[in-house]
Image (cartoon, rainbow, N blue to C red):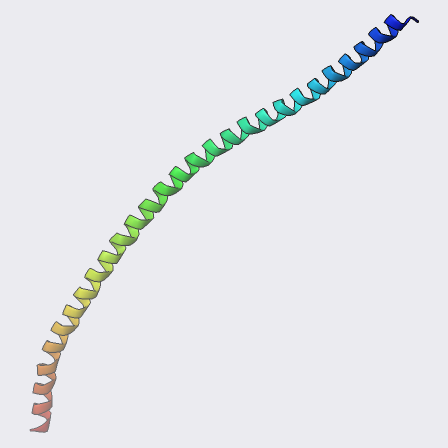
Length: 102
């Protein structure tokens, strides 16, 4: 084997190592790109789920506000009902009590 052949063989060997190193680096980059694309899909899916959750939360808040209004109206009605019933029963009770005492 001549010096020239040895030099060529060494150069080819070094080039092969460089090409293999580039292939490994390209594979890593490709893997990172695939991961980034998958992550982008996941983020998009999460965005849709967040929007849906936001809509549900807004509906729940509206429902709670309506129930709060209804509860306040019910409390007011109960106060008036108790007041009216008490104002009817008190004189009636006093009348009956005065009839029993006399």
